[in-house]
Amino acid sequence: MERITSTKNQAVQLMKALFTRKSRNEHGLFPVEGAVMIREALSNGLVPHLVLAEDKFEELAGQLEAAGARAHLASPNVLSAACDTVTPQGIVCAFTLPEELPEENLPEKLVILDGVQDPGNCGTIWRTADAAGIGGIVFGLKSADPLSAKVQRAAMGSGFRVGYRSCDLTELLPALRVKGYSIISSALDGEDFYARTPVGEKFALIIGSEAHGVSQTTKDASTHILKLPMRGGAESLNAAVAAGIMMYELMR
Amino acid sequence: MERITSTKNQAVQLMKALFTRKSRNEHGLFPVEGAVMIREALSNGLVPHLVLAEDKFEELAGQLEAAGARAHLASPNVLSAACDTVTPQGIVCAFTLPEELPEENLPEKLVILDGVQDPGNCGTIWRTADAAGIGGIVFGLKSADPLSAKVQRAAMGSGFRVGYRSCDLTELLPALRVKGYSIISSALDGEDFYARTPVGEKFALIIGSEAHGVSQTTKDASTHILKLPMRGGAESLNAAVAAGIMMYELMR
Image (tube, rainbow over all chains, first blue to last red; front, side, top):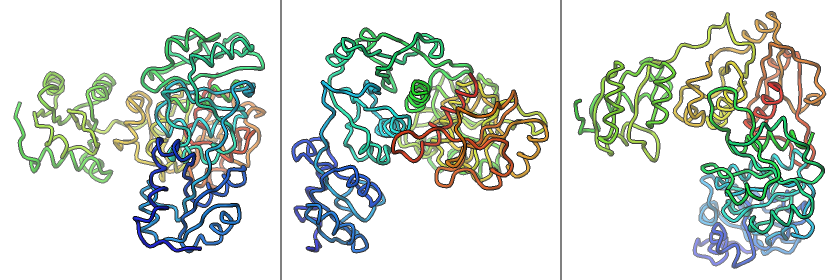
């Protein structure tokens, strides 16, 4: 295993670049930090391409090498230069971008992000979807990038288990409706979530942006516009909390 | 209204100090940043003591002065020196610490934080408790400080509407049990939340720490140990999301 000593090394520069969306799409790779997340990615069939590891992670780096990655040992300061976290995890691996869910064959239970921009919210919703048993997650165009390190960190491995798709919702939602999905928008002017008409076996739960909620186009394409009861003085819920309450209730 | 030009001014130094727990307790004051949050605090009966405002917030500063506060105008850089946010909100006001909920007369529906340390999680749970209609929130000794700026920011005003108490849970929980409360611990080794035996009108839902869950002492004092179903591969939920799902379900 080659040892990298310079932060100017090409592999270090490539890894660092992958923390931007543009470079991820150019190279077809995305970075995963830390042994736990890397093992999750491997065990979910993702293909490793390039790994930088401190000596203490040499064994895991060797496994990644055996799975086809170029592996390098590096000092903590070189790792720091390659990563975007304040506290680097000692190992970072670039994986090939996963295949997105096929538009023609989406799961029956979906959660859809309509402009949810906070990466922590997006990742937390992904993690909760996994726990609730939701089959897939769709990122609308104005949402955070599903493969950003912050989203994946908040998803805590669920980003490798629950399939996703990035697409334009103005095309997707009418197509889903034709296929018999209930399209459920959560909005502050909606009807009581707990008094909803049944949503059936196929549904897409749509979570709107933190600042503006679901877009008008999305509302127009919806079969249900629902709101969780607000009993006290709070005007709204955190997007990830609202998503969690509704996903768990819909999956009961 | 006096104008402050030096960041070394005593009022600026006092305000800055209030961003630490020790100083808040010493002075009996806590800082609230931004016009929206300050108006929420005022309208919920909190007593303003000291305000620093940029010129554009002179009217609000005047209202606070009329309500008994010492008010000062200051430049943005002086405001910056007095606050802990990266983007200061143009006005900051120190309010008298609110009275805590009396231990002898707690609300019938409670959420209790047993070592929840992330201020964002604590504040989000507070906000969700408000929306769900929970009557009060209790901060166990190892939880974040309820009056920290980060907790209050995440609570988005619910921190002024839903009463709180900070106390030692090892004393509180047995006392609540004697009074007929169900003590509900959420734990990964619990029984199915949705198949629970009824919890009755008086209950305390306990949320454990992000890293270790509820403590053994808390479990021993519980009448119910419950777990939300984990259907996919996720091992756990974010603490604020889990709290939200359970609070809304218990308040249906």
